[in-house]
Amino acid sequence: MKRALILTFPVAALAAAFLIAQPGRMGQGRGPHGMMMGTLPDTIVSETNPITPAKVALGRMLFYDGRLSNDGTVSCNSCHDLEKYGVDGRQFSLGVGGQKGGRNSPTVYHAAGQVLQFWDGRAETVEDQAKGPVLNPVEMAMASGTEVERRLRTIPGYVTAFENAFPGQPRPVTFDNMALAIGAFERGLVTPSRWDRFLAGDRAALSNYEFAGHREFMRDGCANCHNGTFVGGRSLQKLGAVKAWPATSDPGREAVTKAETDRMTFKVPTLRNVAKTGPYFHDGSVVQLDEAVRRMAEYQLGANLEPNRVGQIVAWLNTLTGEIPSDYIRKPELP
Ligand code: HEC
Ligand code: HEC
Image (cartoon, rainbow, N blue to C red; front, side, top):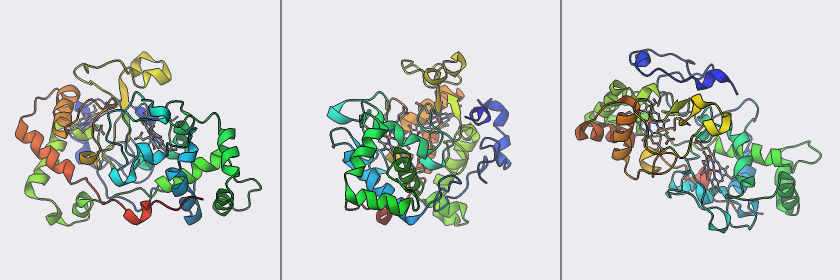
């Protein structure tokens, strides 16, 4: 874990700074996208996991396959429904046997573009992340990676698909390769939106009201934390930065690092598609987007936003709703 990626930002110090492009300030050289909000790439590439059509095809099957769960009923798509912007719309997701976890499922669209995964940032890449839910006892509850390998090896179609995706490997059906294939698939989960058309120079893509919402977002300081191409996903920040957040039962990153300074620190989520990914926050405690915006202003910035300014911001956030890539996500026939 690179320490520099999780700097906690002094909010006021940045108020002016993001008017100037500062590539790499928070991303620390991870790609060209700085504080400024850039347009989406077609795929979110990785140096360590080159994307190939065979790997993506395998990852797509695995993403939809309930057989990666103990009782065969729960797939990645159960909690990250790709037709529904990569979420399940519940406060807490249901794993095998209807068990409830303690956190809201974030979207998998653009997850690959974040510098950290999970609400507490405990994994870095989507490839690292993908092993977590398969073994998590309240999610897919497989006993071990070896157990997953054993099951996949009994399915001839998978053996062939792994051979195609990882050519030249003597025994390609491994838990690690499963995660690489799922990660490669996730790297293509991007949804260009009207905001991207606007950034590309089409001024008519946004109404004046929506653009006023963007200005409001910048002026209020929301972009101190929600910035870059994905409008978030680049740092961990204290929830309740200026006023204590009321619910404290989930300590966030402190549970991972045991450092008191990390108490109530959570990953800043991407706001792309946010109008479609409620309920909001790590505990899914807020249903309405305008209420989420109002709370952010109050607890993160110490501002009491009037309803019309909240409305403008919400109008801009709606322009971040992109187009679902229907062909890319079409459920394949499983082997
Ligand atoms: C039972 C529901 C459930 C299943 C099944 C599930 N997830 Fe998740 N997923 C979650 C929840 C809840 C979180 C947030 C957990 C946390 O932060 O501690 C999460 C987090 C993630 C993240 C991190 C996103 C972010 O913004 O931090 C990714 C990526 C992801 N899941 C992908 C997958 C993949 C791939 C699979 C299948 C191998 C999968 N999930 C299976 C519920 C689920
Ligand atoms: C100091 C950093 C910071 C500032 C400033 C900030 N946010 Fe956030 N935002 C966060 C964090 C951290 C979370 C995740 C909280 C959690 O885990 O429950 C979040 C969550 C959100 C969510 C919920 C997203 C989801 O998927 O659940 C919305 C919407 C949001 N912020 C909008 C805004 C708006 C609008 C502003 C400006 C009024 C703003 N934020 C200012 C750090 C910040």
